[in-house]
Image (cartoon, rainbow over all chains, first blue to last red; front, top):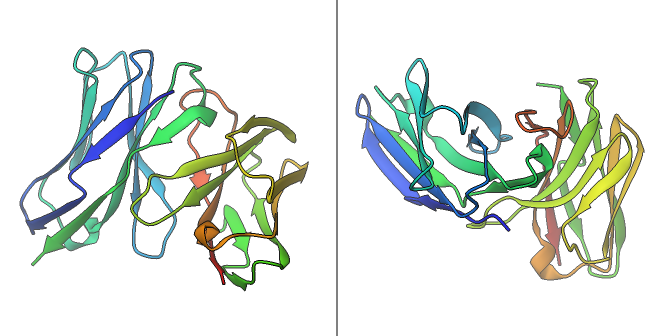
Length: 114
Length: 114
């Protein structure tokens, strides 16, 4: 089955700096890669996703890049703000191509300091 | 945020108890999920229901028994649990089970098994 690895497990940046979180996946047939943000004590929420037919997607300060050849994808947050502090999870959908097959990474705890 | 609700929010139970977790979605979705979230581990998919029919069961021990009486409600019946079952149990729903169907999570039930 699919295996998703995520790094780093913790990340501390100063407000205004950029943050990058990286994930790798094992199943070359995976074709959908969502990112979820989970604030302390709250539920995970989808913040951005990318499909395998594009290499990059942006939404304001958040961008995701995908390298299908290397089987890795990354989340980029620019001009970080304290409210960006949370745990971020990457995920990939395995070769069955259904949402029910989401495999999650172990999460990255991002701390944005003033 | 009231799209997906879960009760109770916290539960402490002994290993010989029987309890049930409840999830309700108000989004008109057709698919519902149970996930287990343990510290420093990725979100683990437990069960998937699509149109009230179980479509996925990820080798979950029989002490966890799901029930989906209709597309809006999902239960997780618990009996003779082990301390290692202590975790945050998250319910999610999506429009369907296709690729790109965003999963909306509930707030979770924090379960402690003593």
